[in-house]
Image (cartoon, rainbow, N blue to C red; front, side):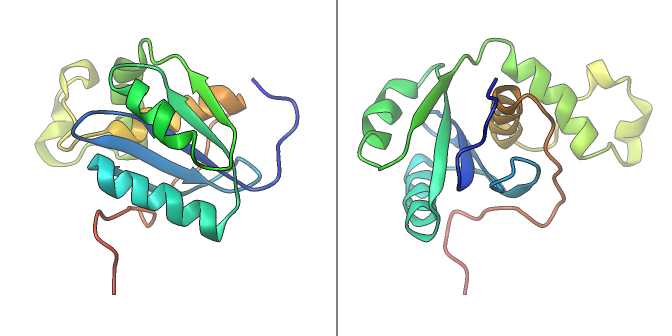
Length: 152
């Protein structure tokens, strides 16, 4: 947990070989500005773009499977990288998913422990890692979804 915030935006990455969870939070560490589950190349593109537009104050990087290539890759960016443990993050993210996106339709009838999210939720894992590092929950609405291709 941190006591003072560096200036700039916060990014968090749940690294993977085929898909990554990525989030961007405001400088105050209170609100998610962008989130998505992306292929590694698109994830890298977003990180570079954010750093150019930013600055990004720090990148919180999960230390689980697939993190080693990312450690080397993000070392080329001029920002601090904060490794965080991913242990237990998948199960915690599944619970948090249903808080961020409440069940609808027939899924509401199932007990939460039996529900599987209807989409990949690596972005929620990244958000949880950032929240754990900052020591607080971040607000998130549905308008912050990232796409793997740049928009018009």
